[in-house]
Length: 469
Image 1: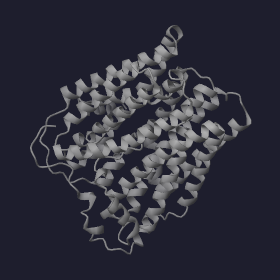
Image 2: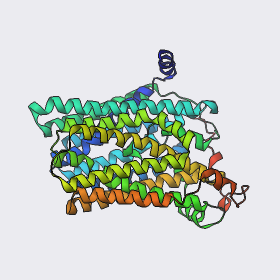
Image 3: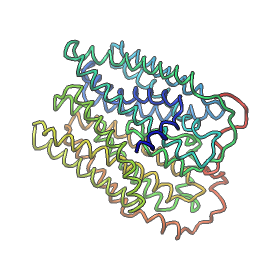
Image 4: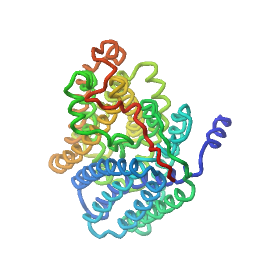
């Protein structure tokens, strides 16, 4: 164990400090923003849902914009430095925002600029390195991000627990926004100081292995964000992939449909959850942070177990099991809220958040793996892009739907809809074939990609132009 930790530490690079600090900021904000909506601006769960939809949509737009710009510029470092600096300025502005409209504006700007770093960070890790090291390097980087995210939730819990007693909730939340704003500016300086300057070159990307390595830690808050290269998807090409024989297999299409429905279900549960804890249960902000910290610790710790289970049982079985467990969790929460107005025992809540986190690792990793294995090799990159796009739009629709339903029918009805959507997703998943059988029964030729598109699997991710990142 000690030897493994020493090896892990030696392999770290100094600019990982910037990534860890930036993820600390993001982890803190993931709970702080919903709390601010309720405690500082006096808005209801409906405002949180609509804000989540707007922010998700802006994040998707940002990934398209920054992905294109990064490819044209052939530079990586400026995008990370700009992203962290802009995020810091947005959080400092939020700390002084006097209205909910300004909070929403700065929150959307923060997510737009965060995508600038998301579109290139993985490229900095793998460019100009041997292909055999990519998965390990990406996994290491995501572990740093996971540590930062959990540390941010711990910071939020400690800060609100100590300061709220003397200064009150409003001052505590505003001061924490200012603190993480300064933290993001510090991350920008570390990125400027330590991200290496190297010469971009053409690199053939082994798409599926790289994406699976990214499954180490993908926070639920950012699950709508397409990864780099997904901006290459064109609506006309996507339509052809769904309608032509050489496009997606029927099983791939069914699984993508199941994915879209399941992400809507996850959104109907996850988006209103912070306000359920603070408004309905009356928990202090520090306890809300602690519960979400437990969830994300579960996500990070469960990933190696999820990878082993997938190898043993297969992707589809793990995907179905994770959805079934969450279906029971969501349905149980809906039934409890419908039948009782009391606060659940703390032991039950702690167990529920552990399950909530652990099942995300199984669901996310098996979903990405299943998409890549169901798709033909020549359109695998497109399938992964569509997977993330549908996840994002499912989250956007869930934000609108949950805000409307929670305000008019309550949390019990909202969680009931979440459980119902997962049930529909599981039903569709039953008709998704085993990936091995789908490959064996594939009638379409492998030599040509749809519409003459060059396979995304082998598309270069860096230009030849010499420049600094």
